[in-house]
Image 1 (cartoon, rainbow, N blue to C red):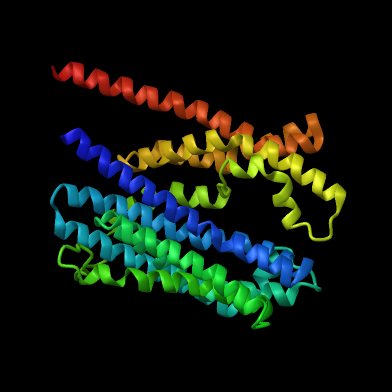
Image 2 (cartoon, one colour):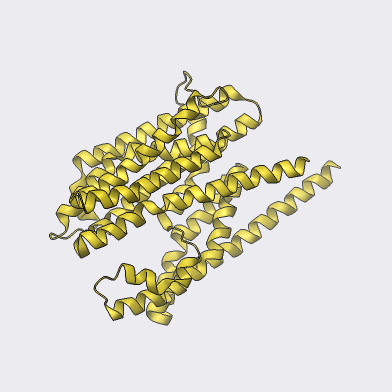
Length: 369
C-alpha cells in the first residue's frame, strides 16, 4: 500500500509538472511566431536579442522558486511548519530585491542594454520597447515562478499546472489580438507576454484561502543561512534556463515544416541549413533529460555541489570549447554537434557521480549494520 501511495504521488506530481512546463515553453514561442508573421525580419531580430534577458529573468525566478520550495518541502516533511513559513517569507524578500533591480534597469538602462546585446540602428526602437517592458514586468515573471513552485510543493500540483497552462494559453491568444486586430506592434507582443504571469498568479490566489495552506508570511528578518541555501539549491535552475531551452523529440521528426513556419521568405539555403541543424541538435534530447533530472535530484536531497558541477559544465564550461573544436573539424556540422556532445559528456560524468553516491550509501548502510 505504501509503495502504491508513493507511485501515485510521484506520477501525479510528475505528469502535472510536465504539462505545466510545456505550457510555459509557449511564452516565447508564441511571440516568435506572431512577431515573425506580423512584424517581419526586424521584429523577429529585436525579439531574439531580448530573449537572453527574458531567460535571465525567468531563470532568476526559477532559482528562487526551486531553491526555496525545495527547502520548504523538507521543512514540511519534518513537520517544521514555522521554519517552512520563514523559508517562504525569505524567498519573497529575495524576489522583491531581484525585482527592484530588474525594474530599475528597465527604467534607466534599457537602451544601454539593447546596445550591449547588439541592436543596430534599424531595430533599436523595437528592441528598446521590448526590453524596457520585459524588464518592467519582471516582478510578475519572478513572483509567478516562485508561487508556482511553492503552490506545487504545498500539496496543490494540479492548481499550479492549471495556472501555468492558463497563463501560457492567454499569452498565445493575447499575442494574436494585440499584434493583428489591435495593431500594437512589438509592444503588443511584450504586453501579451507580460500579462501572462499576472493571469497565472490570479489563477493561484484560491490556494491562499485554503485552511490547509502552509504559505503564510511571518515576521522575520532576512536570514543569511536560508538565503545562501536557497541560492545554492536553485542555482542549477538558473544555469539550465540560461544555457538552453528544451523541446521534445517531435522537433527532430518535424524539422522541415517547423523551419518553414519561420522561413516565410522561403530561402532554400536557410531551410536546408536549419533542417540539417535541427536534426543534429536534437540528438541531445535523451542526454538533456538525464542531466536535468540528475541535477534536480541532487538539489532535492540538498547536495548542491554535484548539481552545480553538472549545470555549469553543460551550460558554460564544455559547450564553448566543444563549439570551437568541432567547428574546426567539421565546420557548420561541428557547430550543431557541439551541444549534443556536451550533453553526452556531462551525462557520462553524471552517471559516474550517481554511482559513487550509491556506493557511499551502501558502505554507510553496511557500517551501520
